[in-house]
Image (cartoon, rainbow, N blue to C red; front, side, top):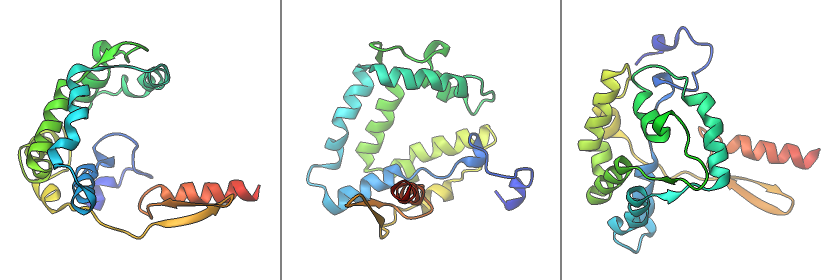
Length: 188
């Protein structure tokens, strides 16, 4: 991808391949575990895998928010959105409160991450799968993008809000916006 790929835009689109970067959560989990973990890495995933396989009842507030997301995500067209909609909007609708929601694909992915210490996500089967999907549907991700990704330890930023120090991750995250919002609220 080059800057020319964004020439038609005045801002980065909210959805679609132009807004996608290499996901960092898995490398963050691994880095946190390496620094402070006591349990075996694989053990951390047992509850999430169980919920993904066996399912859990959707809470009323979650159902309400999920339902409101239908207006955003169900109208999206293109092959790049189809798997997301199949997983999160089975039968073209959000789960209702009390409905049991599960995802075997999530369970399989979590098992692979757990078994490989996250390596598969950046340098193995999962990385290849994501890159193949990106290539097939107009995405820009490459195996090199995944292989060179690494979590970074950064110094947090903070503000004092009503006598409490609130900490956030610095830019390029949204943490700075939260702190600015708190400071603005405190002054008004």
